[in-house]
Image (cartoon, rainbow, N blue to C red):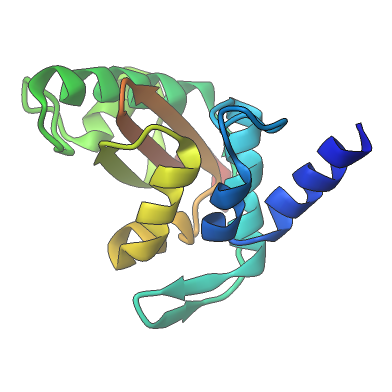
Length: 166
């Protein structure tokens, strides 16, 4: 038990590349794929700040998990998997914000990261952190987060509700 707790502490204090080395199918830590684990890891990155393509991004506030964004992300992950095409538009041409609105998420601001070919959240998070645009989305001034995976396709939706801004 002590070994597991120490490993979890190390996992959340190291960067994603180092943390990934601690994760194995036979180890005591499973790949990070649950809502709470993904949210915690994203918020750890946001609390530290990071470098996005040579631009120093300062620490930003934690995100809150949003079921509506998760549902929008889930539907889109399935859609892009079925088409085998990375896109921010759905099969029928709906852009990100329209997919949010279909879930009754009334947004003031939003962003979306999509990716394919990654088996674990640590893998896709590392790829997004190494991509300047995706990294800036991760470090953006948003309040809500929903993440979904379908097979090896991932969608990360960020938003701030209209009512959340003053």
